[in-house]
Image (cartoon, rainbow, N blue to C red; front, side, top):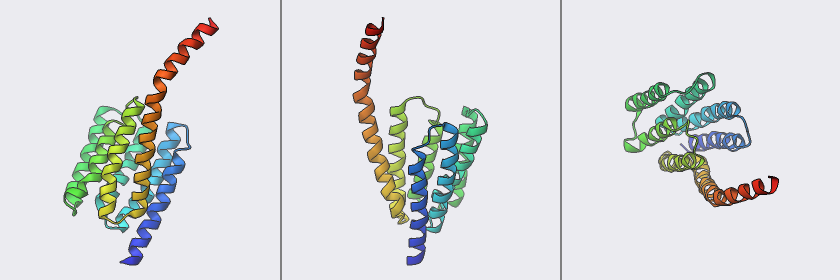
Length: 181
């Protein structure tokens, strides 16, 4: 059991490193492609640790990202991916309520994937990572748990930075207009 725990956490750590590197990418297409690798690695780590529904959430997210790259991500597509998540989880979940957390997190994120609000997307990431944190504790995925917590912290900081910058930006933008006119 100790070797499986170690292997699952090493693989999850590798996926978390890919997740961090994804933050350096600029184009949406490249981000979605990198996330596919991240989800694949982290999904494998979840499966090794006995987290079947976490693996399912990650693997369906790969499919979602690939579709998003090729097609306009419409409401019917969102519904299809949410239904897929729910069906697979309903049949494969052996962890009770905790087993549903990755699915709920993925469904919320899928539904709001096309939002333009930076603050909303960061709030959704925080909520999703809180769910993943509980799930990761349950399957002893300590590598992912560490990055869940760091992701929560950085998104809280990001929200604070966005909120503190908006009034200042508006004021500085209006002063720039006055100077250049």
